[in-house]
Image (spheres, rainbow, N blue to C red):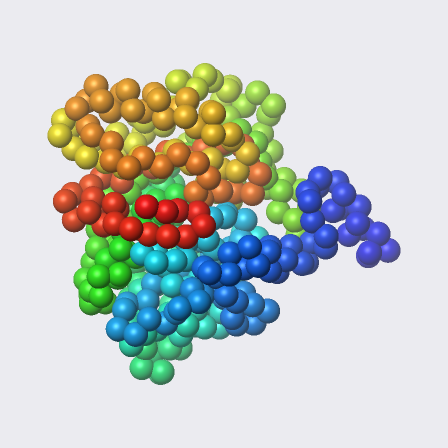
Length: 344
């Protein structure tokens, strides 16, 4: 009976999978098979991904971790000028302490390791415990939490915000700094500066389905949308009728500018990110609106990113991220990097 119920649940999800319990492991197997120059597996069940050349002697290691279901975050940004290792959990579930500790060990080239990840309770707790574990092995670690989702808390309570697509900028900038053989303190400082300068808001049109649950993460009407919804279906700031692309983008832009006012001469990078199902065509329609509005304010856009960078399974929707740049952040953003999901 249990087997029959599992089969019925899997079929009702209309996903391309075998067994739900193998979903993440088979994904990791395929990812590493497709990109052996960037990923190798370590740890329990191969749930730690590591750059093949890691650890790099004398270089600060950078690790992340989090639940599956968000590709390329957290799993995909390993490579030169980016991350060194990541711990991979089940879909929307934090990896365990030992997996995170193994990722730290794998990235440690003797110069210390930065733990750089999103502000989610399970990840924070487990990474803190992993850091305490490796301290007994004389591995120095620091932490930068990315908390860029403006809809999840106000400016006065920024430490409560969720970490979403702004992580991509933090990975890129911190990775570029580490590639210069900078100290752990300097890599940590620039990662924190990048995190402080990232602001994101999202919009969801449909839910997604976690394979193990077999049902949508939330419900939303056929003609509704929700501004500010999180990447796991956390509540947003407003639900209402679906609007035009310009109206949606305009509302998101207003939220971002209220949180991080911009003026003529400012330089920002803009990320228009698909949450999974939204096609590039629609992302470019929205980017067009943002580019026009920022140009009218005299704000320069540097190295925009449009595509799937931080997803939520098959959720329809997008997120809009601004990363405000200074001279240092801009140079690091434009520095070379190489992974299957981000090259420059």
